[in-house]
Image (tube, rainbow, N blue to C red; front, side, top):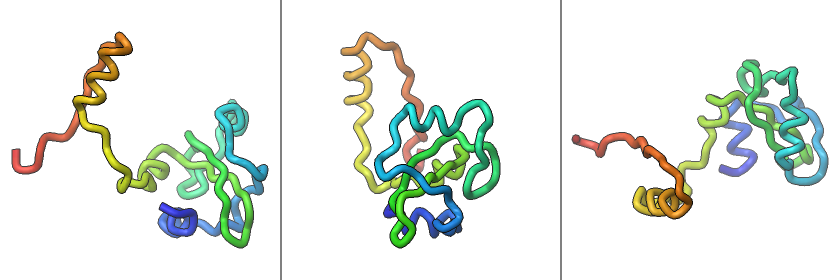
Length: 108
């Protein structure tokens, strides 16, 4: 999802988002921004659980702080998925015990 579509789907005006550094956010940036006093989600006002820097056309680089549900609602689902066998093989190779939970096939 491009930035314009992302902001439209959340009904956000990029002019109302806080200016951010002209670069991609690092894990340290996110940890510092979301620190002990959580910021409100830009979309719903609930305490934000994720943040990133977006390059908004016409407004430059802005912080986008989102609550979990708002973040998940904007995940790009067009990305290819990884077959379960690949996940299981990777976990086994890493020596990690995992349980993969998926929805049942349609019609089951």
